[in-house]
Image (cartoon, rainbow, N blue to C red; front, side):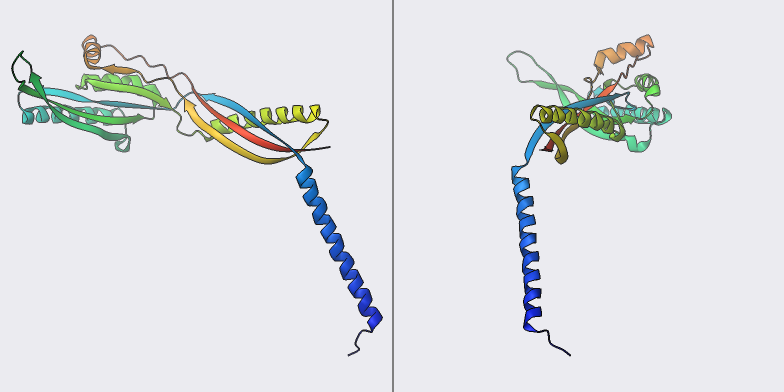
Length: 248
């Protein structure tokens, strides 16, 4: 095998040295360009609206009796009727969850005397998810008819928020880009690329829940009144913090 002569070796070394120098210059130029680049950070908020498709409420029974056992027994009987009514209204068992059970004494107070227990209150409450809002009013009527005397809610929500939030994201991105273009134009530059995007928010803005309880529920049942329901629309909002790189 023929070994390369000294002249050939020197030429190869020179070529390799030039390649290394060129690469170093390219890296330094890229680093310099990155360090000298102009960045602009803008924030843009947007929202999208949609009619809710689920409702969440709590309902239950409060009973009173002379002794604790009787209060619990009476409460259990009425609560069984409440749960059965929910099933007949099309509410799946997975959408009914016990949220609280309590038993408390009912005191009789007399001046200058220690309080005396005159009976007991028993309470049982469940959280209910109604997935057919069109039947929400009928469901409330059925609950009152079987003895539910505690109703709190409903609170309306959107089961699948992704599509609604994507609409808001598109609006926010367009707003952010318009602001970045404005800054670039005023600086005699143009938007080259997006450096980063950070999202915050994405939670719904919903009206406060309606509260119907105690005497009001009993009066509605006595009048055989149907509960009016107005779901309206829910608003989902978010904010995007976007950093753009500007160039000439």
